[in-house]
Length: 206
Image 1: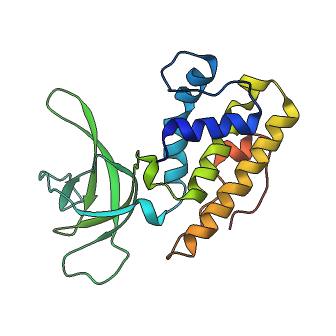
Image 2: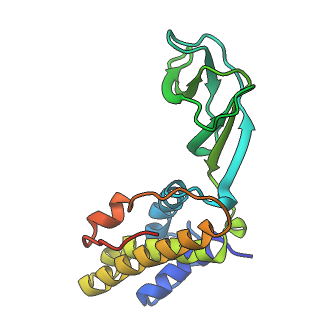
């Protein structure tokens, strides 16, 4: 079984740190650093590509009271990281217009909704997958390099190592995406800003 700790320790191994961690809450420098970036980078990687293992679909709950210009106001799924497309009742086209909008309840608490003109809309989306056992090996490889690239400066203070980690992150993410694309239809997305900004990596993502 693969755990969050296993993925973080793989990242630390890539950086050559002296210590590994036993939990993300043990309080060590390494565990604090990993805990600070793990969930953010996991969600960033998940949302950067239409991964087959993270693709889900659900019939949206109609909340009623749509704003002017729209016929339906749907609840945004709690585990949705990226809404990809909508299927509508009686509509054969894959290109059904929709938009994501902010809203608020009676107490002023903000939440997101999906606005669409079609009834009984079904959303296809990339879900937030938090169980590492569901991650393919190629995704774990990419995520561990992303964590290593993010932590290199903080833990190692080695510019050359940091640049190498960024390069490996770019290459492993590209390889993971290409492998995933072979399992089904996928959409090419641009290089995430966080990699392009760190070390000015210009590798082509397939």
